Image 1 (tube, rainbow, N blue to C red):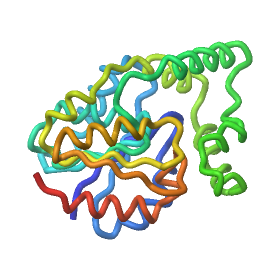
Image 2 (tube, rainbow, N blue to C red):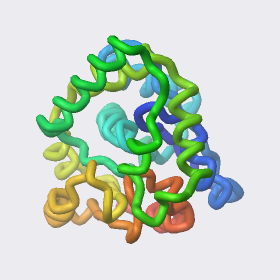
Image 3 (cartoon, rainbow, N blue to C red):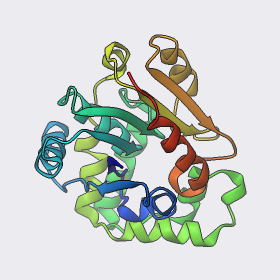
Image 4 (cartoon, one colour):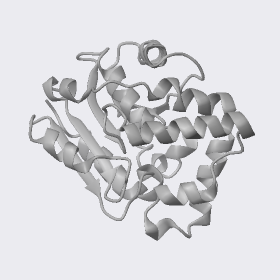
Length: 237
């Protein structure tokens, strides 16, 4: 039975794993790691590292992160050597955010500060999903409910302090632990060409696109995500 820690993305809680976990829970110990609502990127990473150190009690573990959580998972991995067996990054490229994305986040922050936070609009959620999911009101509602479980302070923290990132890809290439990048083939927030490129730089890195899937891989394609997790857990250095 493998110990697996999961780090969620922007404005996501443990409901993010609600479709994935039932498919793998009987075989493994699954732990959700919430992101604290304050601090710099370094302080958030330090908090996640401390949580793992306390709860793992030195046991070998595996780490999965989604979107923002994927970047955080990569940053957390730098604080562990042999204790961390494998890393899986979902729906994220662990590098500096594009200027276009940073500009959009700045506009969002200004809007929220001016008009207050009222949750994620359905049209924004739909833009992140594969077209096959655009009429999936249950999925859209779940994502909206996750966002509404947070407040304005959380959003400003995620879009502000946690947008200040450095490029971690060059470090990924030098590490020897199995590292998988999994993402939807229609996810506009991921750079698939770059992930394919770094895959060729190390035999320990694998890039896995999931067909007919948008940004919310664990919710849109939980069966495929579960299969990827199971295969990933078989990888050894």
